[in-house]
Length: 88
Image (spheres, rainbow, N blue to C red):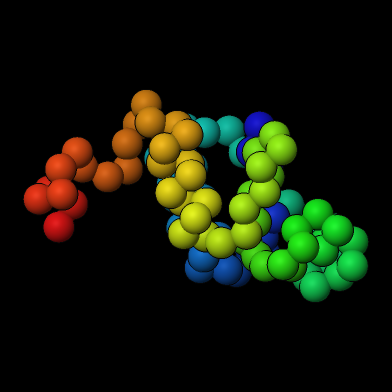
């Protein structure tokens, strides 16, 4: 299961919630352990950025990188059209 570390009011996190729900990907959303910027959180996510995703051994801490990963890792329900013309 994917774990997303975020704060509820983040628009960057809202983008991920929309994507994950559209694709039907199960996920857990949690506040950063120890709070934002804490040493405990930075031991998991060295950059300390939010949102961050943990999926198995992979940790990503940029909402755009996370969105691209989710789009490719779970292709069954694509978020983007097939062609560059349609995406434009």
